[in-house]
Length: 266
Ligand code: FPP
Image (cartoon, rainbow, N blue to C red; front, side):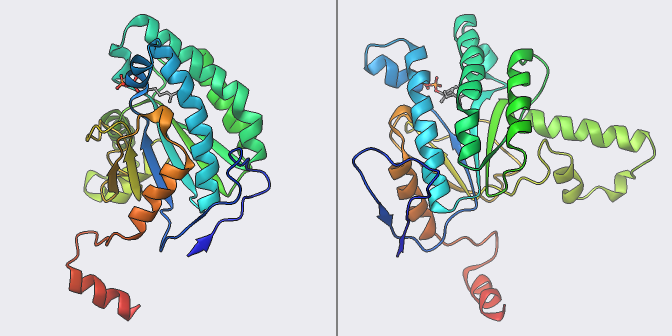
């Protein structure tokens, strides 16, 4: 049982005071597919954009909760390479809103000790959004304890295709031999090569899909699907997920007894 004393820099939800939760181990890297904004808005008789706006509060509370729990990396799927298929007005809204959220929240996140990093493709992404992402990265680059990866214009297959392109270029330039390519070579050519593998992937709103998110990094992640739409997600739901994760037996392809032996030997 661990009691999490709120960190001075991270705000507490009003009226809830110090909160405890028990767990055996905390995932280092959590990835979240923030789904259900549109359905939440629809259920409340609001436009879809209001669902995305409500998602901002959920995101900030989740980041605060992740910091308190001792998670070191949080990746969030803010805009996928497939989201360009949405209506032009929703795409416009999401682009403008991402830019606005980054600008409005970057100082606060910096005070919390959050390092912001962008993962995604440049083509098609609004230049003003790229600029905002780069400014947030530059402002927060010295923060070491917690990393927030904003996946914007991100697709897992696109990331792998881009990595293959760069590896191909290095082969053409004579810097690399095809036979020398290993899993580490591919990992080193991803958008954020030093990003640890995802330990826990959470998707909100009850859908049970990976939807092209962090395909390489999620090879052995634990999956958790929660019924709440993203605007209703908060640090308490996150902590429930962390507790559930702590009770799981991760074997990474090894048999139960093999892993038990390996653990007792080391
Ligand atoms: C998925 O819900 C959500 C998105 C595609 C956008 C995520 C954006 C936010 C959470 C806003 C916070 C802002 C930033 C910059 C992170 P959906 O629209 O697919 O919902 P539905 O499945 O109910 O239609």
